[in-house]
Image 1 (cartoon, rainbow, N blue to C red):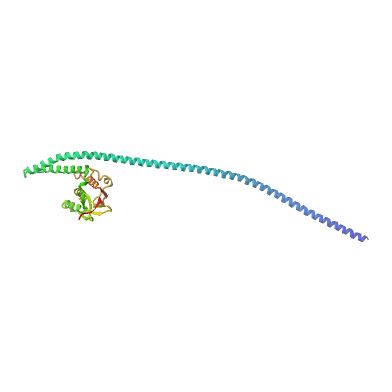
Image 2: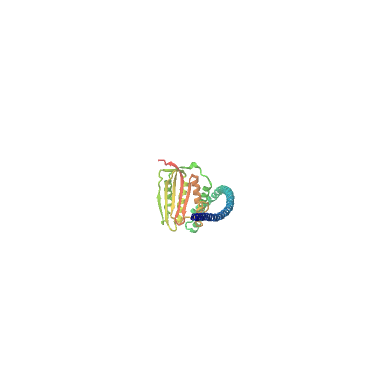
Length: 347
């Protein structure tokens, strides 16, 4: 009995020990779990605090960013509005400047036209006065030339001094009369009823007869006439005067160093052209602007009146044409006479 009781007691003790050990293990497990939970809770609380701080920081950054964006947008809008306003103002300024430039051009054009009109009126007045003066001078020169010629005929052939003096009087009067004739031609309008069908080639051939004898040896003449059957309507004497004047000017320009004068004719679309090209010294740009101005000359005193080209242009304009000039210093000069084509010449 006692042994059974001992066994039961040991078993009970062992059972209690096992139970105690089990409870102890459960307690330890619970304790450890609690500590782990507490640690994790502390960590979670710390993370939550960090997240809150981060959220607060991000919120602050968001509002700052939003404020910056709004400021940038507002500033951009202000700048764009200013830029648009400035662009509109610049456009208005450009339009006003363009309008002012247009008004200035119109005013300048009006001023030029006014000056041209005044110049034409002065020329018309001068032309009227010149015509009367030329007529009066012509009346004076005619008896001077006549009496000087009669005196030379009546003078003693051996009295050379008297003959030379009378010859000088006659030559000077003759030169004066030619100037008067040029002034008269420059100041009057020719009647178109004097015009007739003429061949430009034939005009140039007849002009050759006047200058061929006195043509300098150091000036070479070349010709190329290509309008034998094309006619113009004009005055043969006047057009011959123009051709002769252009030839004489070219020859005088090349007289010192020599050169080549090339005279040609060619047909344009509705016109005929007489071209006088020389290899002389050429004309400066400054002188070229005044080349057709009455009394303008680059020749030495006594060598020219300055009326030749002015008279030539007047004649050509009276024929409904134009005369042009191109020149380069050291390369030569080209005068082109352009006249309206009248049609084929009569057989």
